[in-house]
Length: 424
Image (cartoon, rainbow, N blue to C red; front, side, top):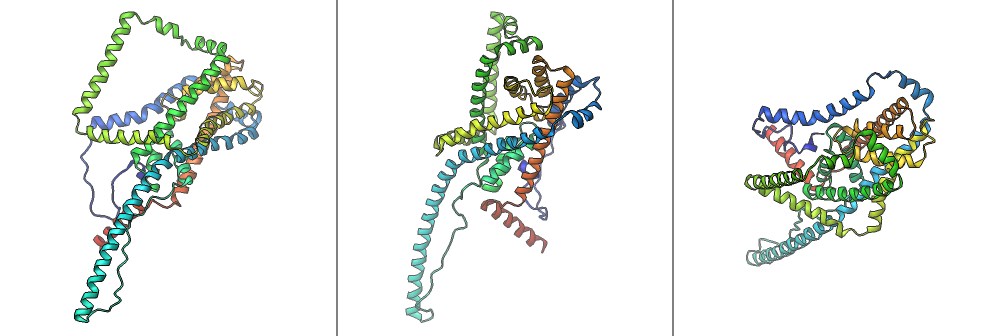
């Protein structure tokens, strides 16, 4: 869907083409590297994990050892997690729409009043002409002028949900692009400012981070012994990391970090895009502040907590698909779920690679055989990724049958009109 990238404005039938400056080879190579690096990193981790394994064994596991009933039962929870995210996003956007509706409605009323005055003046002038010249009728009807700009309507829940579905699917191609793609969908179909919608996404990420840190801390306290074993197995020890830094090292690190921040500030200040960046950040801040205007805060909190409950159930029910994980208990599910949440921070498609390694390590710590843990993470991740793709396709089809925003539709009509005029 090319429109997600906010590409060239215009119709394919139009002869007026926008001219773009050619990109430098270094810039092209840099963009290609940014896209390919996540795939290379994830592929390298998977190759390292499954090197020497007999992949044909997976067919026997899928047909003989796996209980597909539990896998299918986990699907509704994965779908609900994304739907909760869409409903919660709509709640965050509604305060901005209300403010825009008030401003737009007031402007519309002022314009309407001005036009009514103009119409009345023209009626009076028309009657004068009728009396003087007899050329016009006494009942000259006044023109009713309506503005093409109508107040913004309510945001459709379906568009928010479609945008979330599509964002997860888009992130499989380019990690982290989903946040931008769903804002582009909302701008196209609901006319919401891209920067303001992006601000609400930032708000969501802040809320999600707080929730993840909260339940991670609780689970860490409950299963502290298992986490200690995990850090020893992976060689990740906080004490070892801190011991490697001397007092001088901390000072040098602080100086370097400060220098980078100052340099970045000076660079942005002297760039021609500085004002544009400031305007974008102001829009983002407005979106962040929109959390204050949420009407039903308990419902917002319900969706926020429900998202992660659904994610956990979507993952935990897959334990019952295999005999070697069905008896591990909810404690193992919670611990591995926490570790997986931090593993997917690494920018790979749907966490492929880091997610596999983290879950496999935790299952081994709970007594699962190495080969069985490998097949578990490969099957579960692959099936859940296919669900994400299916939801993305469904959202793409649903958006195809959805109406654009009035502003977008007006722009498309102008483009088609100009294109038809040029063709004639």
